[in-house]
Length: 621
Image (tube, rainbow, N blue to C red; front, side):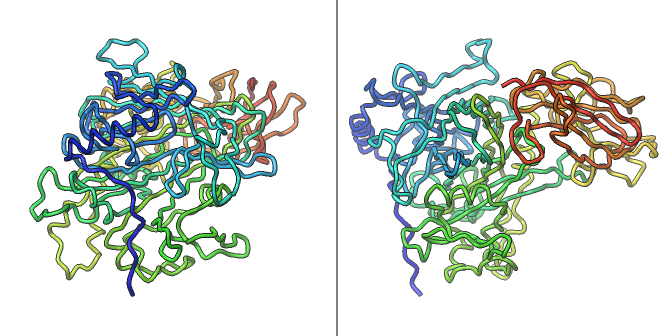
């Protein structure tokens, strides 16, 4: 069988200076844009058009392009003349290794009887539905600690604001599959991204997103998605993007040791073997042996669902493929109306975002997967690498008009991912993928969470330092966050033990931790609570979600009940059995039916065995 070539995309070589200048000038003329100035931004001259800008995170090993239109990277249309690198995401810098064609943010929700999805970037069809304000508004703002700016969190903060409310069909292309113009959700996104020139954070870009409902409608069952079309090659070989691997890493053995397991939920993409044109073993510093991925740090929900989907986009539906579950009577298979991979139209995009599915890794395509559709005829070609894109989605959330949803995630890299390939022998088959090196990117993903919210640090001064693990050297008991809460049983006594914090106190710090790999002693090692108590929720009043803390002196079955002022039950959360320790639980402002409740005074009650306590809180929208 002859497999057709994948859909060609416009990619420009960086080695031809004349061509680069001509393309850049042509692009500026066609869009009315001026060259990038010292503020790292691209600006259109026309005041009547969106003030489209881009900026480059260039202070560490991840040189990532961000924009004020919900897009990551250039997608072959804009060039980074600031660092003269010519890439969407060069990693590890200074080597000219591309890791990204383009990416973007998707937001989907149910609005009345309609299903709507807004995409910051979508390459098939090529539609962008987030846009900034017209000039002089809508500009990207940059802060740097190098300028001693008191507002700065990192060595380079880049802040962009954009909305999905523009409907001008000359700018926002109608979706040919929905056969209608863009229908806005009515949202504004404030996108803040942070990078540090510090060895601890040299592989990390942290994003803190505020998604605001600025429209008149309730956004029901809202999901947020991060779409990545990651192409891995070394310039000037711009055709080397057709041999990439993609997958999802749920957990990894912790670098803290003691057989701890870290939860990652990391979507990743890499080259297939570390080689570009003309490369051979042994590897060098410029070999394609690294990996990049997206790691969700935080979202305000106590029932968050995560989905991961990858696919190969092809203009021929026969070869447009992505893993799909067969479907059941309760969860029937959905026909995308094109191929098995690309979700076309808002309804199909929303289905992919909201459907609870974690695709098997690309290199497992030739294995048997009960409950999944069979692999395509060209599976042996795909297992060796392909032009892959993925979508990492999470939700659901519900937002009433005026509410804001905060989300934090990281774009992270890792070294030594493909180092074992040079020890590969054909007799191994493709089993060598079992030797992929996740340790470095896993550590960096964990570190991103620690930078966002420093573990063992009581930011708000309420006495809570975050969750911790106990590693008892003279006992076989090891407490792990995946199996049960990270507190030791009160019936065990250790003569030799280490305390390792692994979360903060739920209040963002956005700074490098003081003891980033050790964290054993932020002050006094917390003792078990002397008695049962609950804390005042924070923040209070609150808008979208709030954190409720409580102390347990001994193991107990715990539940949280929310009442309205009339004493009626609004929400009941069965937390389950908890050993002695300090805890917190998030209430997302929804009732038991998943609907957002109205502003007002509410009561919250924690029941823990024979103990109970109640406090008041205020929801203010």
